[in-house]
Image (tube, rainbow, N blue to C red; front, side):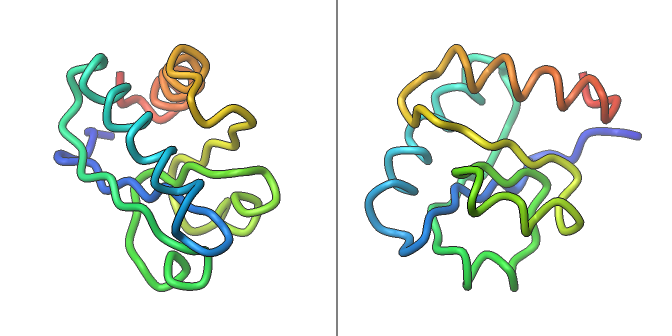
Length: 99
């Protein structure tokens, strides 16, 4: 399966204001490191459910509901941990045949 470009990425949190914005910035940096074109949007859970995404990133309590809605779903605990997010994305992308 070929990797979508640019990837549509949702950084999700409960309200879509603070945490998702921090996560969006972290994700944008990681996608640049990986040299993968991506459009990263910060949003709340309710809005995210009606949006198309190739990748959903957020806290465990929010990402569980996206397991059947996006090919790649990543649960994070530290929103500023670029290395951790990169490792998780690489693992998921390899499983999808995107790397």
